[in-house]
Image (cartoon, rainbow, N blue to C red; front, side, top):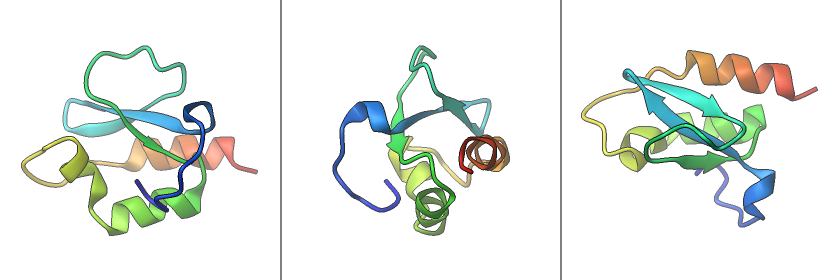
Amino acid sequence: MGCRERVAKSELLRIVVDEGACAPDPRGTLPGRGAYVHPTSVCLDLAVRRRAFPRAFKAKGPLDTAALTRFVGRVTP
């Protein structure tokens, strides 16, 4: 979603919507529609800047990405 590169699904982080916020789903087991992004801050920033999450989840407005940003910050060195 962010950088639009094609890679194996195992290299990407699945994201779901939980109560109006984007939540990371590293194991890929949470219910609902999923969107995929590289687990890097650069790719996440691109997705947020392009407003890709509301489009991908067909949401009516902005989604909170704070939890997702914290998760990616912990994962990326």
